Every structure is written in C-alpha cells, then in structure tokens.
Image (cartoon, rainbow, N blue to C red; front, side, top):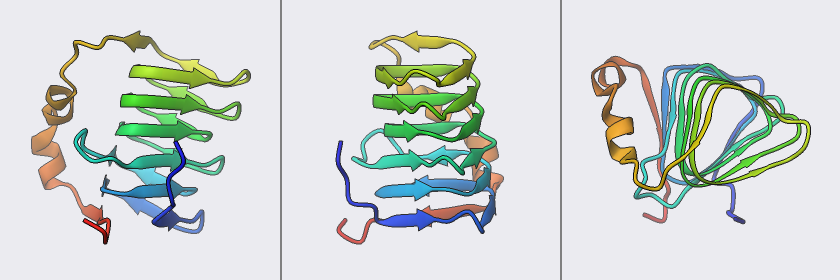
Length: 139
C-alpha cells in the first residue's frame, strides 16, 4: 500500500470542518470534522500518532496510528497500528491490526454493504460545513 504523500497536515494546525481528499494525505493534527475520500478515488489516508480526529473517516485505504472519535468506513484495506485508539464503529473490507490497538466499538465486515449510501447519509450537514479540498495535481 505504498503511496507517495502529496499532502502533510502537521500538528501545529487545527482544522474545523470536513476534509475532502483525492490523493495521499498524512495527518498529524486535530480535525474536528469528517475526513472523506470517495470510494472511486485511489487515495490513502494516513492518521499519524499525533492525529486526533473528531468525526468519521471514509476512504479506500486508511492507516490509523492516532485517535479517532467517530466511525471508520474503509472500502478496501484498513491498517490499525499499535498506537491507534478508536472510539466508534468500524466497517471494513480488509483489516490488518497490530497488537496494542484499542477499539471501543464494533468491527463489521460485509462485502455487500453499499458504501456510497453510507457516504451520502449526512450530505445535508456536509454541504453546510466548511470544506478544505485537497486535490491530486495529477488528476
């Protein structure tokens, strides 16, 4: 799952609002909002040890080594590192979890779930939020 990091969000930044991703991003900051990468985009979300996400995380490839207070919806491969702490439910296709990770929620594997419906559940709220869009310059 090697991807070149196109965007780095350092720990000195606090983001309030949803992040819409279309590339590889490494987050080591506080995000008070959802981190969203649509299913049809081949991107990766890296949540480093200093990351604190207060919202849901949606993406095809997700690596978590920080804190998430929200649900995680992973369309392809979810990697959960030993320093990860997740307070929320996790819906995934494939998962790789290291010893030491802490999860307070349910893990659900179901290949028949329509992730597009999950993404669209809160569209009204997402449309009213402040948005930061990270575009992949190669697209």
